[in-house]
Image (cartoon, rainbow, N blue to C red):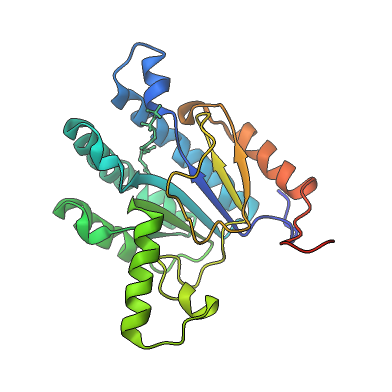
Length: 231
Ligand code: FPP
């Protein structure tokens, strides 16, 4: 696996298309989410192999509460089950779990599990896996404004970042969205200011290691990032 300086330090992914994947197979939507869990594992493992230090996955947005209650309940249970089963492997691969979003607004059993899994992986240092749960970019910015005002800190870009959920982490170099839509959907609005954006029509459950590697190679090989400069 490549280990050079052009490997993205932070990759963020909008895992979209689970419902449509299921519907296209005449299956209930929840089957798409179940199939999506397997891909989470593959992409996490591949990211660690590439030497990516931060991977952020958009698992549940502040807008996802508008879904049918049975689907919302299913998603939280699926998340807890999936991570429970995956925890030993995360520790073995030294992947630290971190959660971004309004965690206090989640059901009690999810909050308890979040604390438990943070604790279990606290000594891991090969890669950090941020799971965005009950996450909204606007809410994150508004909360950061409130907190920085209350703290009395000087307001500048550097100090402001300390009040975001991603405090201490680099901005995403690359944001990938599966499922065909071309928008950010309230994801990492502050942090995405110079991220490269990749959109693929592939539904998340069909997103493969090969396609992910092709996107990473494209990012590492072809794209020249100028950050607003000339060269
Ligand atoms: C988007 O598809 C997917 C989600 C809202 C949930 C993603 C969750 C998982 C893959 C499972 C658990 C996650 C972890 C980190 C273990 P959609 O339902 O919006 O699909 P659609 O656009 O086709 O309706």
